[in-house]
Length: 263
Image 1 (cartoon, rainbow, N blue to C red):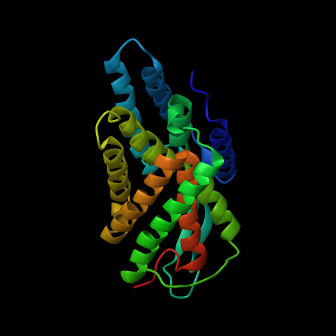
Image 2: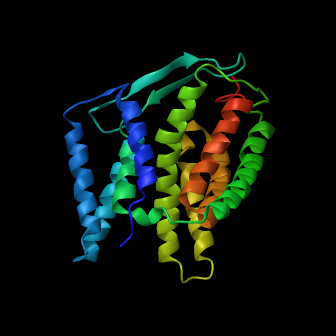
């Protein structure tokens, strides 16, 4: 029996509690919770493959809706009002989202295999490799495209941003894209010669497409960064992917224009 990844669940619980303190839930959220429970029970049962696939399909639809804040009843509190972190940046605002963390809870409770265990030294090497590649590709690419500039800073909102980004953004996104999508495809394609590589590329492309609303530049850069996150996951596990993703976001926030240069 696979043990539940309690450290990740504890972090998500902390993040959800942080978000909950800034917002509120309406009665309509019970519908979402019921559907997530239904999809989880379908995936965990062993009598019907078709029912298991249907459970995964229902979860995929719910995950998209939760990530895009389409489901009713979640009143996400604004933690940072629109502000220019540097004079040349576009205004930045931040919300503590109550809906998105449910994706991570579902994945860690229903699919604990998304968090394989690695020795900490192995994970550290994977983080170093993944972060170096992601920083060169994504931040270097952003500078070449004229989207960001060198702008070291530590605004007073920094600690709040770090907590939100780690607990409510990075952890959830890596559980979904690297753990569920890349990890799931790796399990299905493990007998193919390039199955691991295909899984990594597919997850990276989907991660890039998830950033399409921000424009083709961010979609491209997110896809490139996703390759670094995917390599960290492949060779160091979920914790390495989370640390790599969070590390790149922190580098962007602290040392470069955030979120991007104003037109």
